[in-house]
Length: 315
Ligand code: PSU
Ligand code: MN
Image 1 (tube, rainbow, N blue to C red):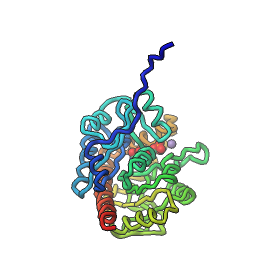
Image 2 (cartoon, rainbow, N blue to C red):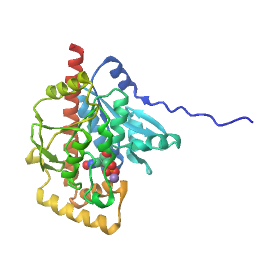
Image 3 (spheres, helix red, strand yellow):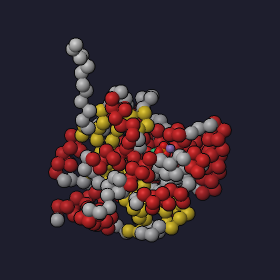
Image 4 (cartoon, protein in one colour):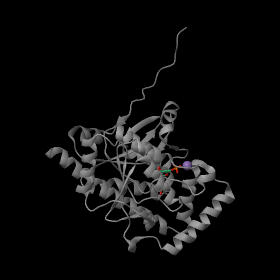
């Protein structure tokens, strides 16, 4: 019998600008699409997605926003693809385990920190900018809800520039898990782990670095040792005068956690639900802070990528 099933091609597609930059050893910064599709409200999400890419360019690197369009995994979405993931309904939230399922079924999907890190590292990109990392949820002792971001970073050699984790999570437990999993954590010009909307998440860090060049040195050391093959979290806090008002933050958080309980929200819907609650309950104040965080992280990530590329070129 003839088999009429035509096998689709599942190769990862690189945007042409990203492909050229990687071939020439120029600096590239990976960006995730889950913040665009699920983390930021429409219509601001598309504008912000473009601003993030521009922030990377302004600091001298090429942005590679990663996502899945009609089953094709893309490193370096073009503007039409970015628009599609920001505006159409039914974009799946993809962690690493979902990538092949989404490809084989021809889905549109946005990649989380976990999936973006894994795809970026496989593509030879060493630096990734995002807003906040996933982590251990507050009821994890009962629900076992811990983001796959953590375990993925344990085995993925990439530097993730973020503003720590949101206090919608159990910040202390998240730091403990990162230690257990062997993920490096360093404060950028701070020895306190940031709490995303708020400058200080309440926990000390063992390490602090002061410049993008120093971060590039860490990446070079890890590569030359070839001993630690996990990720490095570069925690970049907002200045205190730019953080969300801590009283407003605490109120919004308490309300959000109560609503979560009331509505019985679980699993991968928890993070988007709480983010949407913050954006509506603070009447946009948290959105402005969120955008500021991402743009600062994109800038720092690009400067790290530039320093790393200069180091490679000089070596
Ligand atoms: N934290 C944020 N904003 C976000 C996310 C996390 O402050 O948009 C997104 C990231 O893509 C992250 C994902 O990887 O949520 C974590 O989801 P989960 O908890 O379901 O693993
Ligand atoms: Mn989860």
